[in-house]
Structure formats: C-alpha cells, structure tokens
Amino acid sequence: MKTIWSAPPQESLPNKKPPVLFLPGWGFSGQVLELADKQCSWASPSASLDPATALSEIFAFLSQYHLETIHLVGWSLGAFLAFDCACAFPEKVTGLTLMGMRASWPSSEIEAIRQGLATDPQAFLRDFYRKSFLGYKKESRRFVAEQQEALLESLDMQVLGRGLDYLAQWRLPAQVPQCPVSCWHGRRDIIAPMAEQAMIPGARTTIIEHGGHALFLDREFVLGE
Image: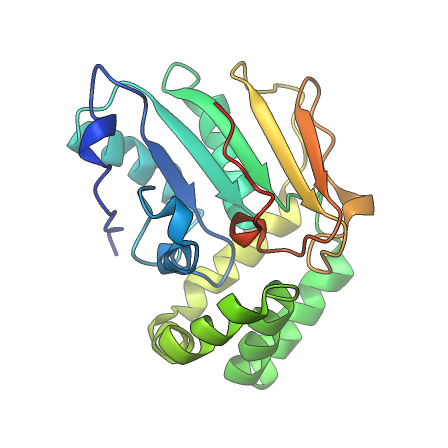
C-alpha cells in the first residue's frame, strides 16, 4: 500500500529551509509525532514504514512536493532507514538526526519478537509500546488513550515481519552519509541500550541521561540546524 505523508509546512517549501521528515520506529506510524507538540511541523507517514518500499516512497515524497533537499529525523527502525536513504540519495539529504539507533539487532532478540508476535501479537505489541514510552508517562497515557487501539487494528503483520527481517540483516556499511549526522541516545533506553549504540564516524553524539527510547518526546531533545 502506498504511504500517505503529511505535507511539509509552507515555510519550508523550496528556496527556504529544507523541511524535516520524521521516520518512525518499528510498529509505529508517524501519528506518534502528535504526542510531541513542539515537533508538530514535521512531515511524517500515516502508516508504518515498509523497508521494502520506504526509500522509493521517500523519493516520491520529495518529488510530490518538488523538494530539492530534506532533513531526515529517524527514530529506531526509522533511523536505519534514514541512514540508508542518505547513502542512496546523498544529494537530497542535508542532514540526519538519528535517535535510538543500535549498531545491530541480535538474532536472539529478533527471534524473541517473532515468537511474541506469533503467540499473541496484540499483547506483545502493547508491552513493546509500554517499554518504548518508559520515562514519558504523560505521553504514554495519551498514546494508550488516543492512538494505541487504532494503531493495533491498522498494523500489517507482513510489514512488521519485513521490518524484523530488515533489522536482522542491517549492519553499518563502509559508506557513511556525507551530510552532518547527529545521534541521540537515552541512558535509560531498554529498547536500544546505549552500550549497543551505532558508532558512526564523524557523527555528533548526544546522551540524554534520563532519556528513554522515545527521545523525540524528551524536553532535552533539540533538532540541530
């Protein structure tokens, strides 16, 4: 299914500051961005991203809005996709902001996720969402009240499976993006432990001491120029 993107803000259209496109994590849609009021001007996808089609759909987004360049903000799985997009289209990406990005996902963890989905997908995903929002109680309550059930109903299990396949095989390539890269990690992140963070040559790294996984919600997170 073709991804529907929210439109970039008018003040970021061509000849002005490149717009920001938010790529959400595994099991989430771009709607999660609504929990972070300060970032509401970012464009985002309406559904979970499929790694099999994400890069071509990002390129289509640029073409649809006649955008020459863009800044990508990637969270968790979205960080891997943002990195790959910057490598594939270096002339299009002016900057990367990567949150909660691991160097790789251990096969044992991927298999545990697959088993959880096979046993009781909704119960597993509710627990995954709870862990993703640890440290952000207010936003977690809003997510449960406003988004969780509709998201669970909308998720495509095949897309989730392809996301796991993608995470299982991803390794940091020898080629790194030529644009500025900013990496953010939370000391209390249990989904992407800081000890397993991706070490990207030349990237600027910021550690949020009390940050969890959903760093775009953190009051200490600021999008770099």
